[in-house]
Image (tube, rainbow, N blue to C red; front, side, top):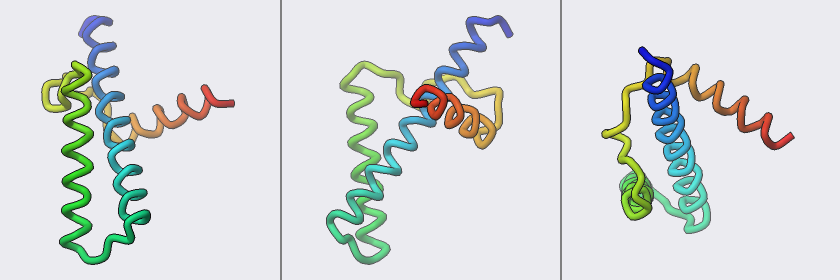
Amino acid sequence: MNDELKNNSELGSIAVLTANIFRATQTEEKLRRENVQGKTKANTTHFEVGKKVRQTIEELGGTMPEDLPTPNEDLKRLEKRVQKKLKGNHE
């Protein structure tokens, strides 16, 4: 795999990972802020936040997650590496 494809794959993986982290944190905050109770309401909230995140990606002209290259690296490993990079940028 050439460097350009490797970099595109990595960037795609990072974009998906950060979108998922954003979706998860926003959902968690909404559940807490609105005191959502019950599994059905919580699932609906997760779906609605995810839909908004996807809508925003689309409106900004971003690439939808399913259209990004498949990562060559295990997701957990990538997540640890991205977290390490993010922490390094804030210190």
